[in-house]
Image (cartoon, rainbow, N blue to C red):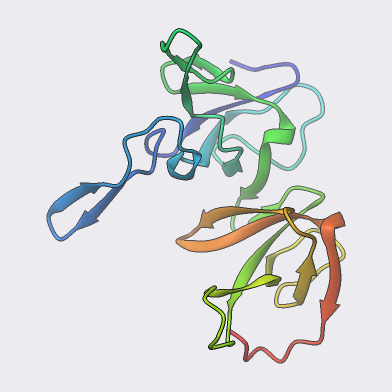
Length: 185
């Protein structure tokens, strides 16, 4: 199956990442379908569009928008699939719902960077991370891995990639590059 303008994907694993294994016991962290924090965001590409395809190939892993696999309740309380749902474990998504692609290494889509938060060293601040500051982990053109950057408020969106918490930030919302010594983690 091939779409003219869209990607056909399936979730890697299940729709939700709400189970954590501790020893031999599976602990369910969340049972709410409307909570986006536990929605799976990794997908495997089944097919690419016939028109306008980039470097993504069938079999690649992609990081997608949190609503792709999510279920929701309509006004009558009936549980529904997302608008991307096609059948069984198959979803049809547009290119703007893909934020990064993995084929040998993670590469963000044009216009995006993934920023690793850095620890807050201020012992009087209750926040564990420095606000609006981080280190580039995966970069679009114009930024390099390891650069310390600042970004605008509300421009970051949390993802977990390879077990690491990262913020997806549009490159245009990165406002400053700091000189970084690499000892602030």
